[in-house]
Length: 226
Image (cartoon, rainbow, N blue to C red; front, side, top):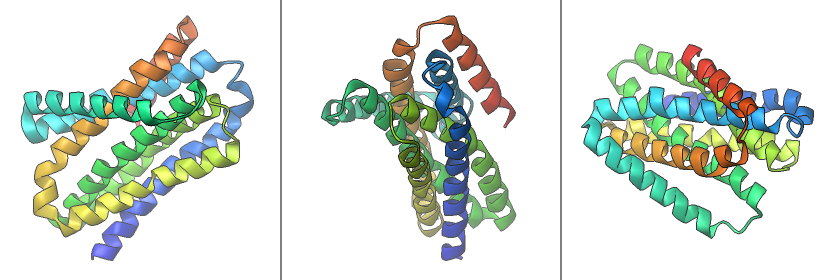
């Protein structure tokens, strides 16, 4: 049971973000030309995930105050990580996006594992939904990394790696169901804080144009309809 759930979570994570990375290959030659649009698209996807999913689910788990506090803590942790990353400005932005998706996928894996403890049908359904939901997130991460001048082969590798924490989270969620179910709201809020910081500090300041606004709105629509 534990191995089965872990593998389902791992596949949902790796395939979802990996497909987003593969889709980004189609846009790689246009990223420089339309960088403002693609950064807006990336930021729109990430902020929509924060507002529509992470913070809402965290509030359901532990209330508004706890969500706000741990979201802020997540932002502070990310700011600290930023000071420790010794990369050029563009590369730092790409790696921060990668880290934010990593942190985001762990609590999603916890949710999958915890759901399997309830019913297997619920767990499988959630794994499919989250796997599909990870496609635009993988795309957002890949576009950010491509915009940071990273090689496309390395970008795809990073999108695959980003899905691994979902497998880890699924294992922890099913093995320590009682413990991690109570902490799920905390993990979701920390992931939300990470993503908010990355978008507001690294993505949007570099993309101040109407193309960024259009990309942001399209990214919001993508998350809203998947």
